Image (cartoon, rainbow, N blue to C red; front, side):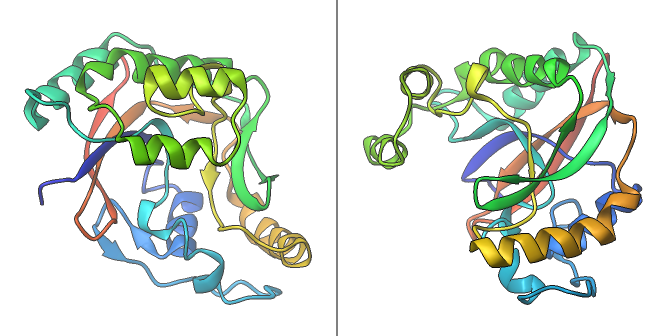
Length: 229
């Protein structure tokens, strides 16, 4: 597979119970590059397949550097080398934990407690690897602006090709598409009941991952890079 775009993600350890559950919940295993059977979660107002249709193709992840096309003159081997070098110069860390939260009209896992170490990691990924990012095409920029951006988000879009980075970054592991208010509450209650006992506390961050988008739009794990080398 030659990826159409690349991204730097946090990808949970596939050995963790919560990661296995959430991978099945989404229905796409980006590590195995294969569909995953949905779990049976009582109390849902909609089928899991419908709830997770929008985020499915990305797999279980949190974005650190948003998807980008390779800049002219760059190649995948150089990108992997740069990722390894960057990660080796960073230290692993622990966060307090994760919890299921509403983020607008969708559901996501978010950090409990101090998120500053994760925010710093994401900012480093965005800046250190920016030479590999081709400029976003005008139509993509206009699509981003159509959502309505703050001044800081507009500056990010112009400088980094994406509005929700740097001070506008918010770590999240997306677990649903947009839901109506009634469905949102019911899905949150059912999913929280099934998932919360599995969530990590503390929440260890030991590596980052390079992912690639296949021509069909699904993301695949390419390689993990341990923090600290």
